[in-house]
Length: 138
Image (cartoon, rainbow, N blue to C red; front, side):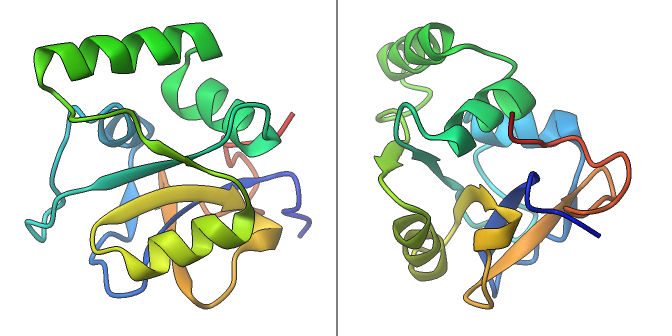
């Protein structure tokens, strides 16, 4: 199955997270759900503005555009929901390295950029490459 156009949600290999609903995923990435079932705090990561993976995450996870995302995290920082917006990472390699090396990190990669340093989390029971998998790059 071709999964090159799919956006994979990734966590560290030791994370208990195996599957999330689309709704739960949005809550995690919006910092509305701060900890996993294992009690470890989520550390949200993002790609830099302009990256196709970021555009896909904004559309498929956040259901926001770039401006709404910036406003959302400005407000969330102001109210104390988060300390800062997710730090943008400039490459798939940087994303893999950060997620693999940071306890609680959750991020996203093109499915074709995933290696065995990180673990793919299913969304609504589906993996990248499955029919009906929702997170797609434009």
